[in-house]
Length: 404
Image 1 (cartoon, rainbow, N blue to C red):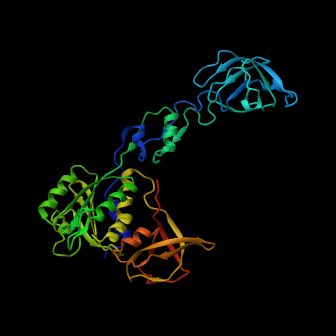
Image 2: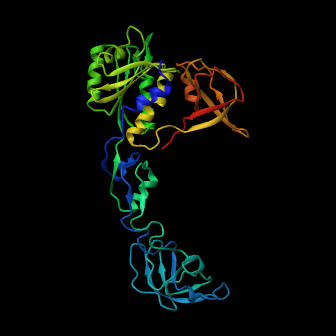
Image 3: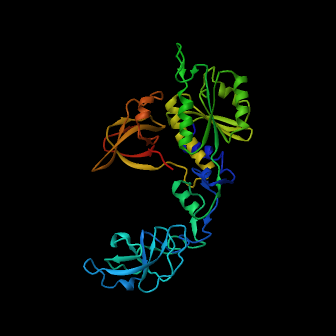
């Protein structure tokens, strides 16, 4: 029986970061930068004001107060996007709006709230410091500075910087196209009536969502009936348009486990038992040149297997520097048992008190219990040699919170 760690390494070995492509700026959201982006010009690119007010020479306002305001002549009016037409000379001021270029001669901006808002002559009641309310050229970013390193996941924050730096497109690793293929004669579409012995195809919808959360681009292929010809046709179709294929169901030892029957004939997919609970029957390999990972059909087994084996591979294919979820130290809040010789991934809910993070097993741990999975905040990783976890024992959790 293969260890979890061995199967993780085998899954990650199936793929690497997808080759970079250049995309328009907004298409880069959620992708990983494949280049270091440097500044073509400084930010800000010119001295400008951070306030609506008056550009002045601070020395002209010595002694200004509420009881003894200083009066200056207003010689120009500058809105954002327009250039000043005159320099500020002793005894004068330029009315100026936020973001407008500072006129020559001025060394500070007086907020309009410190004035009577005059348009020809302005009375000012406070003395600004030199440089007050002035954004200096290059104070954020200097020309040639590294803005964003390669390997960064592009979010709205990076988009703002890239746009400000004048980048209309960037080089990124594309998000992998993932085919989600569910199999079984028993499957019906969610929302349709269930005949006796049929079940809704929850797995493919769950895994589609999981792929999206991992940053991939999923498409649903199926459900495919338990027919070898139909499955071969589906695999051939998906291999032509996908970067990764993921199937669920049909990998155990049953007489109608079609996925295993078909893929075992190719010689490039191996089926193994992994020492874990839930999710022991696993398979991986290639259909042609396209990686495929086959997951068990029980829904919790499929989800846990995705988290442990598929999600890291998707993140590697995206070019992410870090492929694993965050691990959190916790304390067991209620005792539970674990199977000997297998790594258990126990669904837990968490609470926080003065001791730290407290983890509680979430109900029955059967591989079909979707209610407990939906309520879980994390997976507690119980090593193969541990058969009982007592209240107060230390735990390591895989945090299932959304990331990126």
